[in-house]
Length: 157
Image 1 (cartoon, rainbow, N blue to C red):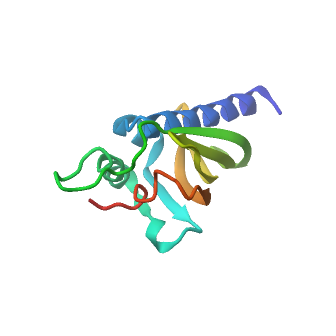
Image 2 (cartoon, helix red, strand yellow; image 1 turned 120 degrees about the vertical axis):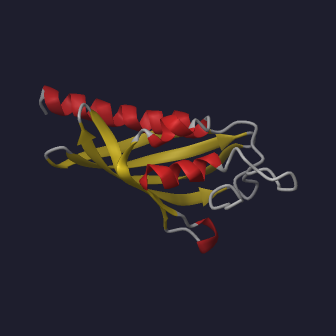
């Protein structure tokens, strides 16, 4: 492993951390900035009720924005007073010049403790001096029966 590869790996890890921090804090502009212009965010291996697929920064921004907006009679998007996604083991492999893929385990904590967990399956693309997410598949492996995120993922209003 040479210095260029080490720096690329750290840049990819930095993008993952930016995604997590921005998503947990509902910072829409920061969240969409980690995706390529044509980036894809989608679910994988989940029931239809949790399924989602968004293409491009505009669709991804709309999805995250609606978590902060609701009609007066609508229930909250989720019942958590805080959300913290923790990333753990991450395997990054370079697939070509300016391209990489990664498999990363994650666990989300809320007021109840471990709330839900899974795996990110990512494709990254180098854009100028940044490594951005070109395609993120979010796999949900487990959700607590007391999860505060039972309606958060695919809610359309």
